[in-house]
Image 1: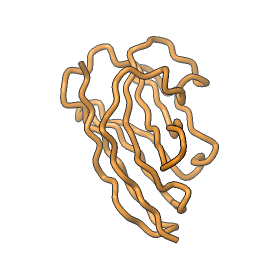
Image 2: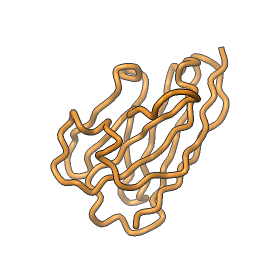
Image 3: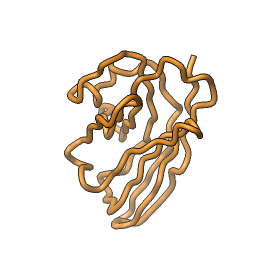
Length: 128
């Protein structure tokens, strides 16, 4: 069982930046991809960014492309989401996820069904 713990959420003004972190507190053998999702009140959870562990394949939602960057530090077992030029539409609970399916296609990286393990979430609030 992979346990994921997010941190780094908070309140920021529009145009500002935040960096979210997700640390795996247990053995991560068998994890082949990781991602960030978000959910705002009244909306379904949506994929924001995903990354393969084995290669450089990544995927971003169109709404964050060019503003958010997903990265990871294997030694620290930590996944990051650098959020720049945020706007009020980015306000949501952000979740980290990990998946054990091999050879995930880029088009599948932002799907909830591609992930087995989930963190508890960290809140991001962007004010105008």
